[in-house]
Image 1: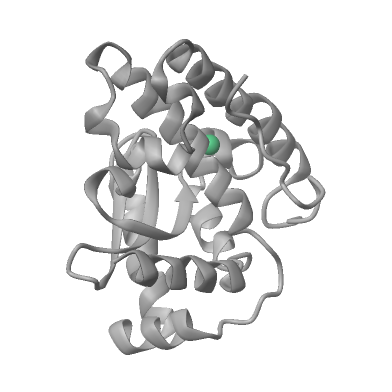
Image 2: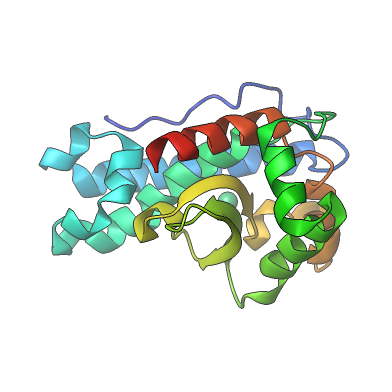
Length: 203
Ligand code: MN3
């Protein structure tokens, strides 16, 4: 099999109490694994089975039409979750080039959080919230439906938040806004900074 479930790089309980152990375990071993399996199934026997996942999602329009929907959903699911896990870590200081750029654009971290939370909470249905570097090379807060990825729209993702119910419902139930607020305590700003530098390099 071409695509594989990546290790989290930390224990399932590492993000307690912000994200609970059981949710992390199910989310990683069941949901993410299912995206990987279905993606492998979709690209099997095509030239796309040996591609890098980022290349695949960036070039979704070049994927044959008969497998494009499956690649969009399951490949997007694989890429988005792989990125999301690495962006979660407790007690990382808000600093670096990304912190400077956020304060420059939004005035303060608090203003940024407010707009990001609005993006995460306002779209209907299953979704992701994002901080991206857009085509004008500016930071932008946005959201996507389902497992759609900003890469497919020519935008470079910097921060990702999964806002599907499976990512919070065991602990937060209907209180989605509390989950979104909790996320701000576990953003791995070092990784966000790395993603930002990578995005600037790719522009
Ligand atoms: Mn998910």
